[in-house]
Image (cartoon, rainbow, N blue to C red; front, side, top):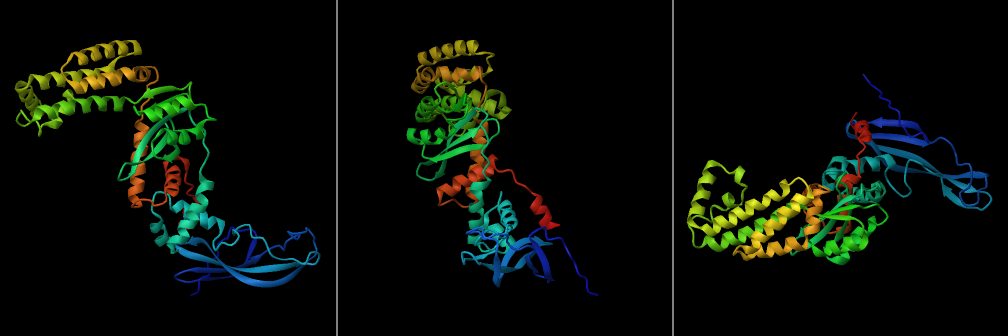
Length: 398
């Protein structure tokens, strides 16, 4: 028993002449419904059919079978200017072998997966899928207004201290811009794309080139130093002290996590180890309690309390015998205004760090990118700019 399945093509400029369905593919022969009204060169209306050719283009799959449209493409002759031209096909880009909707379908499939995976799924060469993706990528990036709160941070993209500067919207999580290196000039180039936006808050770590660039481009914006980087600095200072006394004490090297971990998170076993280390070295105990005391900074209720606490801690740290804490105290004095700004505008770079992790996963998924511009384009698409439309995917799998 022969079953003839007929589905609407959904391309209004074509009429279906014939269709053939096999186990491996669907072939649909079509021709245009209406002839062109005017010559595209001179606008004259008197046209004659010159000849007809067949053109094969790929369309959306049906039931996981690739669909090929065999178009009876007519060419027309203008009796006025004598030009010969092909009829216009709204559904098929010029000089391409796929319909617009199939190209969009392939582009959507590439979101979240590798191009090689999509190449295998749609049975197209890798280079073809790659061209389709990057041809559409620029058009698909939505120019979204900034919330006015941005975070700036760097991410290592290659061994040998090769960095990219990333500017992220702290409200939406969208990557606004990326650029090579993390020096002053690079930061200026990256952040200058936001000069027309109303940027009133910038969160960053204590990296001087970023600070200078932000001050230059957004002199009225409030700069907040990310609290996690501040806490990281005190941990690093304490770790230098721990290493200096570890040669004299037993087991301190293996107990690193017990010393660096917050006191209220310690297990009973780690608490016991901590007591042993403190009993062996008063110097280590002194440094440990200075470190733990500093954490109370971000428990203060307002900027006035935080400033009083910070001044007290700095004074205590400077009176201690620990040079790493002396150096850290000088850093706190330098960045004090922007550290305390957190208590008026409690924003952090947590969303930026999360986006950086996503960027690293994207890089690992592709085993690295040789073309840095394409890498940045992919990041912008996958980190907030591109909202995938699944309607074509649902139609194809129906």
